[in-house]
Length: 319
Image 1 (tube, rainbow, N blue to C red):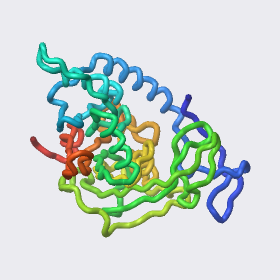
Image 2 (cartoon, rainbow, N blue to C red; image 1 turned 90 degrees about the horizontal axis):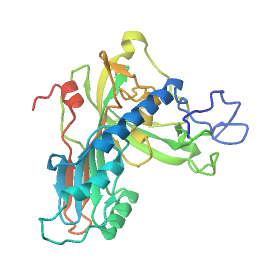
Image 3 (spheres, rainbow, N blue to C red; image 1 turned 180 degrees about the vertical axis):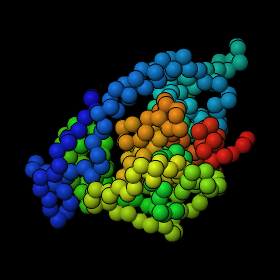
């Protein structure tokens, strides 16, 4: 489906937020930029080519036991390619017969998002992971390279609605619209992400994940965001860590856009295509960690994917 969206302003309003003449809730984030369609098509073609040539090696493995395997997925590689490549790592020694495991993706990352991807080795373990994600028992963190006006906050939590608008694009909706019907029959669902700033223009230090439940501002989305600054003021380089509480499609990307700090390279959501005179091949978002109770042993497992080069460079880390 082509990525396009309504461009007309809302024509009606109600006490429960913006409403269209069709009585559908109106998205509060902008429509997809016209140029994004062409760029995304080019990136998809490049990713298809890269994925067809890609093969997993042991250097991609973060963790493995008899029930699951965790992979550090590279940017620009489809999750389906990772899944189909796993059997090459699981081949038994020659002459040893072992049944092929029932492989399933436990979590799915966007094409251009790198980081922790878990593949389970049985239907039983897969179903347990589905329940754990549904019950919000899996803790996730992401690192994003953003650009925009330097935030006045150090920590913030954004609560909003999430859904597909009239032409199928994912958009931010008012929190009060959660549960309301959208075109096509779907409904607005709740979406919550917490953020902390790690660095602004190279000032700041990388630090371990924190318990972000206490402190920080809370934004309950009910209206369109008001953008501040322009020109040089809007060109700060910002590294944030995101803690998604829900697991909606493009959640972190949408909330970064709403906060006015779109992810670098994320052309769908107003991110710059070129940064520091370098054209971006995809958005700069990395699935840093996953923590969960092991579905079989009950042990607490915490998996971390090494930071990509863009994050090390921006955070001035040396390994």
